[in-house]
Length: 395
Image (cartoon, rainbow, N blue to C red; front, side, top):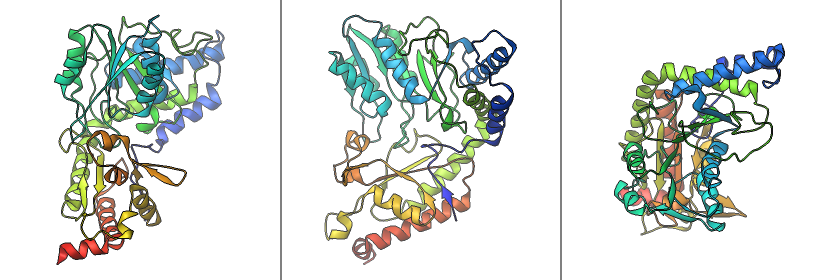
């Protein structure tokens, strides 16, 4: 069996999106900035895709700026706001942001900006009262991730956004993991900037978007020909944008039924692993992405042998891959040394435990049989890797 459970990393491109891209490559390949027929065919395709992406979050089409992906959208939000100021100001992010936010914030810090990183609780949630307390007269931007990609926790975005709005502070959220899986209505949600990614919703890699509320000013981070309303220069990737538009349209149509199906599968996997020794769920079980399951392997301190000490999230990724199951881990490996997950560390996990996190994310092709088989294989792997631990529990 081959079971892919890493849909938060990327999703397979839908056949409908591939068909739209093939048509663009073969029939609508002109430069959208050109005034002749070939260019205008491509420009029309881009604008139709813009409408479809805008509809996914109930935005007006003119508020959607196409980018190369979620990372560029995040960078555009952070750096685009920062470049509006001649002197360093203050921004706020959470301690569980994606690196596409945390690293640009770190760059600003090196340039003299003040950066506040809000702590989170053991479930990975930000306390709105701590955001309220962290605001300063020179705070110009708050960026809080909507759905955390490693542990699945959803943030109280509406409450956080209302706090920012009441203080006249711009609010950005990275909604890459949420869009297409949960409803987003920017007409009601108090966000000024919102990042999207095509390949998280069964569109092609290489396309994304930044929603910019009307009246919000950004200084471009890419200058040149002035494409994308002069906010993101460079000839648009017409085929990728066309695929993105189709994927967004279909995600919008299928969201309600697919969300409920994924929640059932997600909870089924959690339930099957609930009684397994030495594995605990991470993230918030109730304020959670519908497709997201995550665990931390925590062997008991007593009777821990050399074998157990070597078990990391990467170990389980490799073992499951040998069984034909694709998942991911939060820890990273540099020069042979496993680095603890900064997300789990921020949530209060010890360094040792923060190397043992795993993530299983579900998608359109996931079935109950996939869930049952994965749970069985994962239990068998844990039993093989930690025989002493399971023997102690069983006795």
